[in-house]
Image (tube, rainbow, N blue to C red):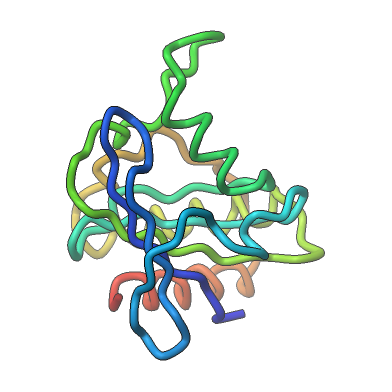
Length: 156
């Protein structure tokens, strides 16, 4: 599992105002929507946000990524959820998304926690906008997967 999808986005007033998709040849093309498979519901996904070279947030969802971002950007505290802490950034962000067909969301949360820990271990800081981590005991395979994803993300 090394394939990921890469987007660049700009925010304004807690909305995505610019979205670019990285083509297979490495160039970015403007788009108005996220593309399949990241828009598939019930498909576990792990996503990493970067600002310049810094990993600032790691998240997991099985929702359509468009719906997940919309919810996280618009949340105002209803039921105690205030949304993404990075929603007021006004600089270009890179979004990397890995899809995990057939996997449980709890397994992907385990990988998420290991990646957050890898950021802490390698930078001496937690990801700047991380607000929660789902801690679970992990298998060696999940640790290896997390390290592979972390290595990919930090080099993009």
